[in-house]
Image (cartoon, rainbow, N blue to C red; front, side, top):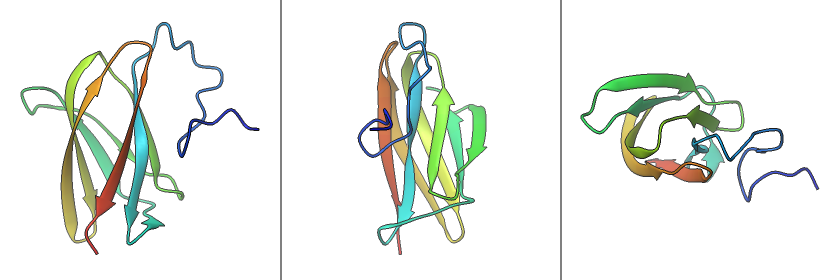
Length: 99
């Protein structure tokens, strides 16, 4: 057992009493999309951060508690997903890019 959350990245070593985590995976037709970009936008739509997805399509942000928009940019597609982050919890998000 590797300590990973169901379907997601491991939170082993994170002090979840102090962290607010948004993480997930980007896929297209059931396959992970590596090299896509996921942007974190605040409640007013302002850009806060951006990370590339790993080869397995995974991404992770450490954010303040609250409502956020994840904007995923991949070749030929842009997908927005709403997420609510809460202190001490992992907000797991699956982003499916249209085929």
